[in-house]
Each structure stands twice: as C-alpha cells, then as structure tokens.
Image 1 (tube, helix red, strand yellow):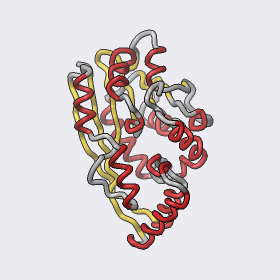
Image 2: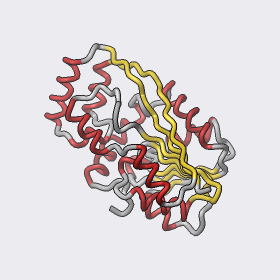
Image 3: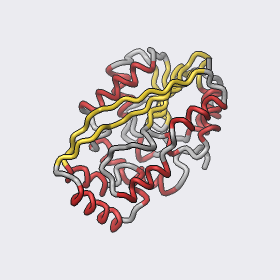
Amino acid sequence: SAGGLYQSGMISGHYSGVARNYGKFVFYADGVLRQWQLGKIYEALSSPKRIADVGGGNGSFLRRLEKELLPTCHVTLIEPSGAMMKDSEIIDRVETDAESWCKSLDSPNYDCILLKEVIHHFDNRKDIFHLLKERALTANGRLLIVTRPKYKIEYPFFPEASKVWQEEQPDETDILNELKTVGFQSVQISTACFPLEIDKVQWCNMIKQRFWSTFSHFSDQELNNGVDYIMKKYPPILRFYEKMILILAQPQ
C-alpha cells in the first residue's frame, strides 16, 4: 500500500460502507464514553498548538477536542477515505494516507500527532513512525497512539471474530519496541478502562453493520451465524469494560 492506511481494498471499501452510520455506533457517538475518551486523550496531549489526527475518519472526535478543550489549537485531519471525511466539519483536512502526507510536508511543525484506533491498519508501522518523527513532529512534540489490547478483551464476540481480532490487533509491546527502534527516546504506556452497558440486540445490529473492520472479514451468512451464537450465549444486557491503551512517544 501507499502508506499502510488502509492497506487493502477490502478495508477501504469497508469504511465507504459504514461511513453513513459511523457516528451512531456507541463507540463513536457523542455520550459518556466519548467524553471519557476526550478527557483521557486531552490529559496526554499537554496543550498543543498544532495537532494532526491521522486516520481520523470524519473528524468528529478531533472537532470535539478542538471545540471543548483546545479552542486555540490548529487542527488538521488526515484521512484516506473520501466517504468518511465527506461531511467533516474540520476545515484543514487532507484526503490521503499517512506516508503520502508526511512526504508532502516541508518541515516538521506539528507538536502533537494523534493516531486513534488506526494502528492496526498500518502494514508498515515502523516506516510510518520514522516518517512521523522525521517529517511531521517537532523536536519536543508528542505522538499519541490510542489503541485496544490484543489479548484479554471483554467484547462479546463470536469465536471467529475473536480470532480475527487477535490476528490483526498489534501488541503494545511490539509498538513500543518499534517506536524505540526508529528513535523515540521516551515511550510511556498506560491503560484506561470504562464500564460499558449495551443492549444485546443493539450490539448484534452493530455487528451486522460491520461497525469495526474486524467484521469486514465475514460474509452476511457468517455474521448471521455469529449473531446467533451471541444471542444464545450472552444475557440481554451486555456489560464489559472498554479498554483503551495510550502510548505516548516523544523524540527527546
């Protein structure tokens, strides 16, 4: 791929397909979970003057961050899916992948770069980290990676979906080692947990709509079989922890 985001036509097609309903899913809708995420990410950012959200989808998270917590900060949205960013409210937005964006920059002038829930789409993470460090991030800047665990997740999946998750989700230790290898001197990892409660039927409808790219690997029939498994196995109200891993990397 040109830049590891998104590395296959299947993933690109997946985001074109879910773009219309993306903001309605519990993980991306405005609400208590989104507010919690905003707070945790803001704590790690340390009042940036210029922030780029790479792979930021429709920019709704970046817009909330800007509006509520960073009103004087210049924000830039980088997103390869035209369908996802079509209705974005972010003024400074670029439809491209991470690698092409880095190479287009004249000088590093972002003191914060956010990679939120995109790291599993990079097929060349080390190359991207190196480019972000050399071409986009200021010497005192911060790269904040927000991801989810590879293991010990609590999502009510069907077994085949759990298998795909583990195959695709990178381990935070690997990410840390890659960041160190390309020259990030300081790398800190923290985990935050938020208790979620969701109606089982709503959850299954989200799966049928392939709300995460995990489910783009399955046919309609396979998803229906998976939903049948969840409906039989789990109680009417699902309770689990949303686990967010924050990896803060600094060049110095």
